[in-house]
Length: 269
Image (cartoon, rainbow, N blue to C red; front, side):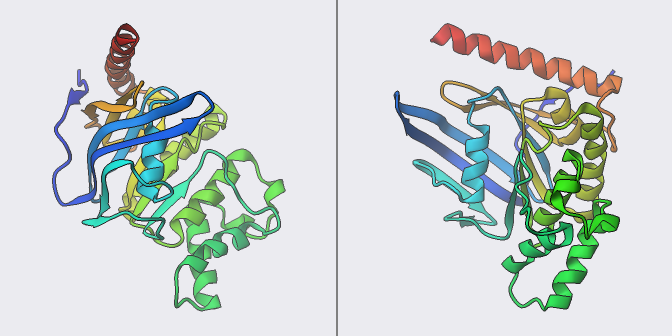
């Protein structure tokens, strides 16, 4: 029976390199250390899942990679260049679809293409149609956003994030609010699209089986403060079924490690 094994960092060439990154925030209760000395290397075209409980810093790390925030200390580099702010090469997909209700489905995807200079109106329309077809929504291009189910809205959000052809796709718990059946369908869609487009994906989740179903590697975070504690390489053929015995076996091992880190953190406090 195959089990998850702790693996070294991904091989070069490196798409993303996070070195000694720390980040704190000021709250009403004082300073909160969200990340401390985080180190991570992600290879070109790799699918990496960031896993851990709420408050462990995984979404903070995603925001730093996106360029929405800057680290207090350490460096975040993409393609060898320091990340100083947002860029169309790194697109974010959130838990909420954040679609524009005054635009139809096609209009939402075309809006993202304003980020790419030099495109004509025809270019934008053709590109938007391509990505709507990729996520299976070409027949709903004229639909209003309020007419869509939650899963369909997230498909539109995925098409919008992919349309500018980013080299890195950052996904912050994009399926957390969906029902189980819709999530399982989207797991298959994301794997298929990732294999077709060869985009580097960082996927934040607190769902262990979701992480195993999707990731080449699962990066385990611990809390107080957030640190990268352990990583697991998932060497299972695709597409993966979240209900399979193989996924469950890997998930059990990772859950055991996660509980161990949480217990260590509680003892330290």
